[in-house]
Image (cartoon, rainbow, N blue to C red; front, side):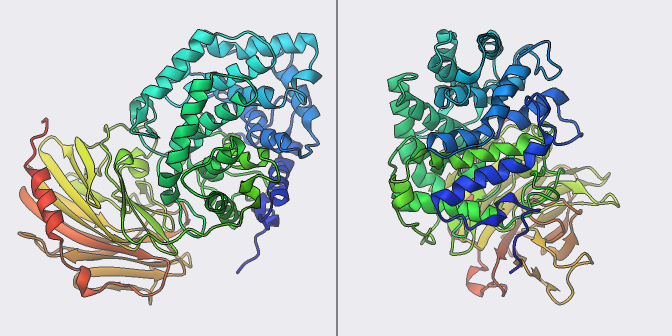
Length: 621
């Protein structure tokens, strides 16, 4: 095993076993930023490339986001040597006469609102380190600047919590705020609730990591602030209750090695994925899991990230996931954006004798059978080295964010293999993973973006989508175990098409072509092996189907989330106008050997029945 290089990862000093180790990780992550702090302390300039907001706000991100780790560090009694920089920055950043002024909140949905929340959190929990060191003039300017979030409206999604966190900070320091606006935000947030403890992220109706690292983590911060006499007791109790039951579901998004299954947007926030586990400890909320299980999920996740090259130069985090990769980022990602990862350190606010810290880590066991989470629209399977999610949520066909189809609409997502974008290579060829791509005779190619209907049933997912008005695709996927799942599609088309269905993308060991000895394309299957494991796809005979040709394709460089060079196994066939049914078995595992026995090469009767019900369902044209 290669020893992690601190230049490629500030967490690499390890060993991330104890509370003191985790506290040191916060300062190790912050230390590389110090060289980039402006003279007045208000801005941290980490890059010159653009995001959708102005550079001054990008530099505000670099200033504010580390507070998500520094605040619980201080609450838990650890020293932080650079509070003076933050105090100076709060003064300069809110001073219109300063060259480092952040600017006012000019209107609705402004990015400054996002960063105001981190400052509100610092005022709520660390007034001694922040507010009490400001002059009266600086205090007045800071309050006036923060009150901009009451003059204008945040986005109608998880952003509503930013107004709530600002209000907590103002309440703590005795400054005025618009309580009516806070109530409106809290009510709107409650309207996004699905079932007992799930949320959708506003009008987009997506279920993704914003559920744990925004809705629930902010709710637990609110609950912890309520212990200080802030906020509303009834709201705080509701957030505690929802979080206590959510834990049992969220554990399934993680694999035993600590990796989470990546899907959705904002994955450059990286280990913010695990912020919920630390927030439980901060708010002292007992869940349906033991504290040892909660600690294990949190700590293994941090250790998994300590092995990834998340910085390529001086310890400043890059845009990307396991490596520097902007192809799958969003336009709202600036160089300071990744520091939302600091949310992962909420457990530091819990005292050293809290059961989060005194309990032994409990390992995450394999699942004996698939788990269906209806409110999330997911079927999840997990063994001792891999977790996989089958995706079955209804969705509008919106191209937000970039690569929305890749982030939200693939048939399956993997903790080991990640996912790929729909990205053209240098020759203009587009391939991707875990998708059915349809191409017309004039070269127009489409994958599943929106679904007219979708759902989960008995360890299966189903969906109906229309890539063109005269083409309807009904799909059913069934889970076998963490390495195997099946898919069957009925395609009714008024035009001639070519279909390409792909398995998981697998990392290549060298920059050359597809691996020679590890790549086998046979009569009904393609198997690709590398140091990352094995990825395969097998054509299954379905009623009325025509055999498909197995192929293997390199993906564009940096098209995949977890590995910069990848290839994908796939099946292809012409689809003349008319009705077609195609099916496959997909295999992907970090272990060697293809693991494809003849027992799984049959389509379950239940999947055929579900497909028939989907295909006969009338949908809007």
